[in-house]
Image (cartoon, rainbow, N blue to C red; front, side, top):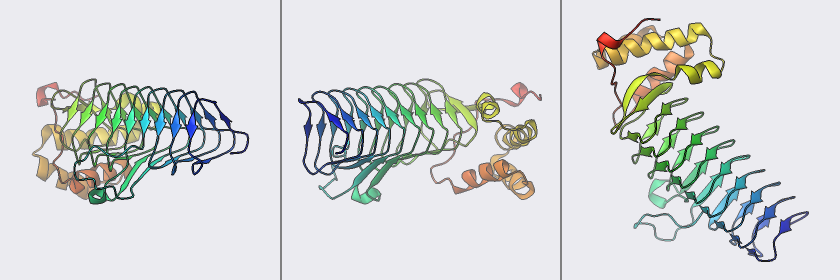
Amino acid sequence: MPDSLIHASAIVHPGARLGSGVRVGPFSIVGEHVVIGDGAILHPHAIFDGHTTLGENVEIFPGASVGLKPQDLKYDGALTTLTIGARTIIRECATLQPGTTGGGGVTTVGSDCLVMAYSHVAHDCRVGNHVIMANVTQLAGHVTIDDHVILGGLTNVHQFVRVGRRAFTGAATRVMQDLPPFTTADGHPAKLFGLNVVGLKRAGWSAETIRAVKQAYRRIFVRGPYAAALTEVEAAAEVPEVIELCAFLRASTRGVTRGGLTLAEDKED
């Protein structure tokens, strides 16, 4: 534990592996099999256990529970893991749990994520990079969240659902089926309300790319019918992002979140 700063009231198991410059705050607990990367900050009153790996420069705020056994009655104590990527921030009282044997045994949260207060990442979830989970976001088991997704506060994501890249949900959205990439969803249950245009522009997408994805969205989700429209768009797709959208829809096994937008409301711009 070279150059690490561990408060006298913290409990760090001798078997834990701490990188250089790690700070462990008062009354935090670090278990035997925990691995912590260089420069990580563990604020007071946080708990770390299980076969958990924290990347470099992660920051965990007070009250967080990281790596304790999953909330699955089928869990039998098998060795499963939780990995959190570099520079990810876990805010107050969030809970993140390792995988289960039935789900592959691995829970992962990528790099440069922000998991806000009271949020929950359940067993066997795969969370990508640059994901933001606003306060009290809840991921059930086996959920996949792709890169650059933003989940509004109080969003609930059902088991086995996948949320596609750069999707965005409004507050208190209940996501029951796969949420396509690049889209915006809201409601209880969720409905689509167009593309995440603001997010795509902020990401530096060209007007031509946004226009192509918007045309594909309109054809599939507004004008339909869904199956025939997907086949038509898929056959003609040349823009990589349109190809990605079609591949996501084609791979869905839970069904896809559909639109709250009517044809009368569909405005060309």
